[in-house]
Image 1 (cartoon, rainbow, N blue to C red):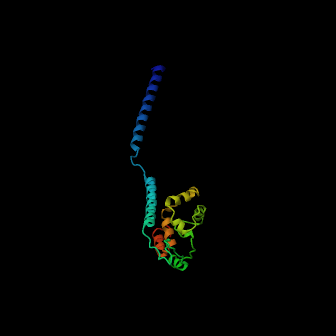
Image 2 (cartoon, helix red, strand yellow):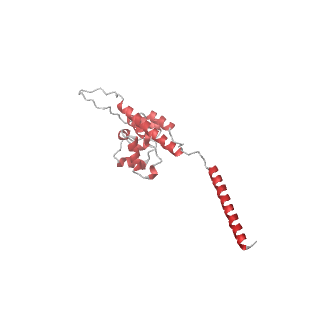
Image 3 (cartoon, rainbow, N blue to C red):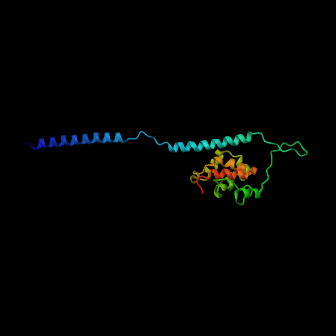
Amino acid sequence: MNADTIDIFFWIILALVGITIGIVGYLLGRGSKSSVVDNSALIKNLEIENTKLRADLEACKKQTAPVEKPKPKSTSSTASPVFSFDAKAAKAALGKKVTKDDLKIVEGIGPKIQGLFHNFNIKTWKALSETSANTCQEVLNSGGKRYRIHDPASWPMQAKMAYEGHWQQLHEWQERHRAGKF
């Protein structure tokens, strides 16, 4: 065998090895592809949106439900009911001192988030109870990325319970929805 024949065999063997490795790689790569798509993030986002929509629906139902009007004193006024704040009843139900219109009483709202709401001129339980979950989310978004983990869907409902003085109901709701805090 001369040198030219050896060079040709070398290149033929090299080409066959390359083609073989390419085919094997293709078959291995094709066989390891998974047909399962992970939609857990999408599902989580949809669950959050569903919770927000349910809270908005409840707020709308409560706003459109017939309200017992207080009996007028001597005028024909049709003012909405006025609720008075009872600190003793709040402390008895929640087990801690409660000050009027303290937004931190709502599960999920701390001092910094309360400050964000104050920046939007939402400073009372009544104002928060009349705020949609989408607006609450806008308030959170104004604080930056660090507030994304919070879910404000129930905040208007909790604020309404506080405003109307339903302390035991608020306490029971918060106990059922403590979000892993013990």
